[in-house]
Length: 411
Image 1 (cartoon, rainbow, N blue to C red):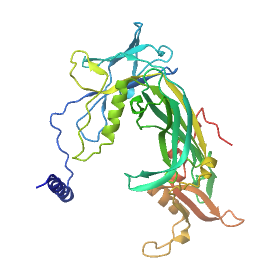
Image 2 (cartoon, rainbow, N blue to C red):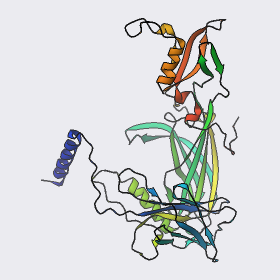
Image 3 (cartoon, rainbow, N blue to C red):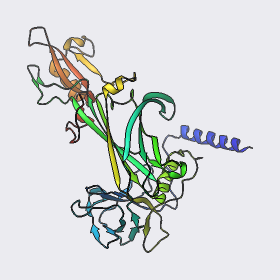
Image 4 (cartoon, one colour):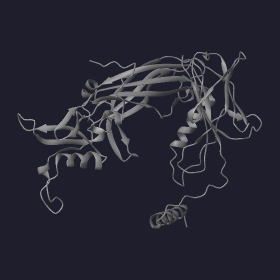
């Protein structure tokens, strides 16, 4: 039998078992070893920095277990050592008044776990980094939903130059956007004679997200000192509410070592390798964290040290309107209803009251909010009650009504 035939046979058996089993099967992980995971980035920004410690666990699709109670510090090439303070969830933070990192200096992360195991990072040089020259966007189309369909939208690009000493660069970004829900809640229903305006209509809010994309550049793939039209992020305008009013992206640029570039590049390869049983094996673990007394122990994650430059770009709905792109429509359900909407039948031997209708949609069901009443013309007598799905009635269910400090509404 050919290799293709063997593979087809295995797939057929696998699918048959999958489709005929009643209870899901979770295979035991043999020879499992809990590994320390270290995540952290320090820059020359005037802020507090966080180191996160956790351990992998054997259950599939589970989050790592936080490591609390560790002793964590950062030392520099001048012999100074700054302790970090533990907070919830295995996170340890620097004091922004005590610790300031400087380009050209080297830093080492030290930690001792509650079990007494001692770890430290390689000595990491904080390299200077160039400014981002420009951020811009263009109309594009891209495959989405596991490459099953094509979507139109915009792709955000940047122009920059490589790092000042070795040319390896990494980026991440924070995105924030203002949105407006279509059916904001304007009234509170007390009873059929008492319907009062809400204190604040939660119609406009902001959403924020930190990128999880891995964006890196190597001078080994290009002889140019300029980085031009580097793709940062694609937004399908018909699938997201990001671009309905105003959108802001803050791109951060870091100069990294070749070893750190290899770490991130291997992460890209692992993530794009697929998850089926015939996929390529993961790349070797690359980390700059080591067990002081057991150098052969595998540690996951990376202690990152880099100067940082950042740049913002704002995109408005008027910018998008010029591109003739599809726009997002909220999947809202709007219900206008009155007692007369329920015909007398075996289900309804008498018409429900207004209070019954409110209880049906807002108390018995958890899907809807009361939005506002409709009165008969020139009357205070109720004609209908309007209900909406909750996400379309209160913007704070998916965002915040507190405007970000940096935000300025474009005219």
